[in-house]
Image (cartoon, rainbow, N blue to C red; front, side):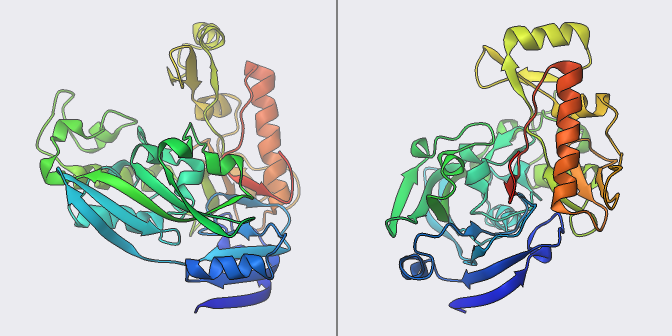
Length: 353
């Protein structure tokens, strides 16, 4: 390619909500080595929106400038002590990477199968599903610093991973992720009991008894996760969505325990410490009656998925503003009923939460 420029670039197919929007100028490159020259020249002093798979974006107003790093390499760097070091470029589709690692005989990413988006977006949000967060598997992240034109390498500790958070998310306009290194166990050397299957129905989907600790592998876990996600979450190719829209709220233990005493069915888990609890945002939203509803404003195409209360959907013509208004209404209802603030996972472009 190397560098391509598209003026008034349509973004509908570049965001999984399928929202109609456009970028004044979209620059694409398939070579990270182009970045220093681009940022020294036409991107100098600019803050382009970085677009990968668009699975973590709610575009309310299209950006003046956008950048897509379409790099696609995956390779094994080293294998030692029953572990492998994997390099993946930022532009690689996340699910493609997961399936590639399984085909190579590597475990560790199976619980994160079928998550939309790209490798470059994964560390920013510290994506997670079914009891695993990607930060647990990352060895290092290679980044480009926009202001200086320099490349840096962050080890896992420097990434400051937290629940749906990272050092990169806190400084979105400073860093551009160009590649990620993963450290993964070899599947043949991994005891089946080490696989994470005791979360959100994986064991049941695999048809395993409660005490089963053998007879399955990482591929089986990935297959179960894929079936669960396809059944519980709408396909963005069919109905526009960005997956889970709201983060599970983390509360002080005393506040959470007071809610649990009143609402005994409310799912709760350990938070980021023994002093906190993570509550199910899906349960809170469902309890407020939002699951399966459509907004009564605008096109009427902004709604909440019937399959899962965490997922906002575009039934066809919803605008970013309509989806944002719906999300705010949902959060206000949860706050009013339970006294709990819930926050969005996706990045909101062209508006504030």
